[in-house]
Image 1: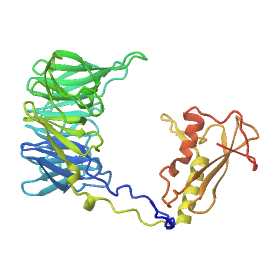
Image 2: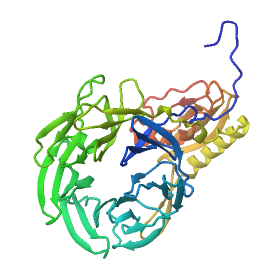
Image 3: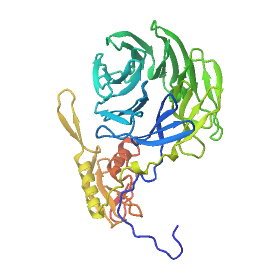
Image 4: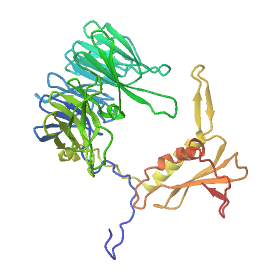
Length: 458
């Protein structure tokens, strides 16, 4: 608030620093022998939680250019931490503080007695060594296998469903020979799966005729025979954050007031019979992760941002860890560099003009022939210009439409906020106009009214 008699500082052209003030927001959790490792939602930073303590941060260098989000996080049997980015894989040995990485692109990462394995983009399986590099590739290309679990000496994949039949494919491969041990067709669209000692548990959904909602099911497949041993219908909460631990299904029902979250249910996954409940001091946020001592999960509490994780024990009180104590400031990207108002405005104008006058190019997948289409069907753009002075400068679009002969339409949007910050949506002016006219069904006004300059502002 500006004190009485004081003036506001002059507007300065700038891009907002969207990273400023960011606090640690958990995204993935990897249980370990003594606690768990937690990945930050948007930054390559980890923290460790154990014995009522939060330890960190621990930055993890990305193996190549690309996004900073962690796609997979796991703790291998030897205690090493494995992190999958879109740009590659990182192996961190906390005992010796050593980091190894490779620019190996994988869709999924899992580990077990058979080692650390990744699912390659073509569906084959790659074994990784201590340098995070690929040492062996097995299996045949299979583009419908987006999920991987390593259990014992076997590798399990769960494939995309066939849209025509709503069936998914569960495949078991021998990690030594690479041969398929068994392949099971399942009724339903795959969502997640877990492998226990004697069964594989698969969560699927099945579409029904509109307007009936989809239904969710938990299927148990016997490992020794590949036969479906059980199936129960489950609430959607199981799909969102269900966990299998010790032949029990854990999930939190989606009911209750914001200030009164329900307990986590422990259910027999074969019959659906409730075996007990575990108190939870908030709402489970994201997936739940089973461990020998209990279940880990992100936690959202009333009027508190999702910056906490909780460890739920079957026979004891839960432990809550607040990750806001992890200092992220040294690991944030640098703030945006200074910008010039006139240069930025001219760039935005030219970019918008090229977008709306260039249109789209449709390429025939069979012949390769290219066909240029207008940016908006039946619309001819007459001018793209700037109006006003900083910070009131506006982008102005003038156009005519076949549906309204003789009418000149216009759209104008401010480039800057009052304090000189670049508008968050200014890059979407063209797309938003197309959506308003075509995609969202609003259309141009049926009774257009022009201003004194003869423009109908839309």
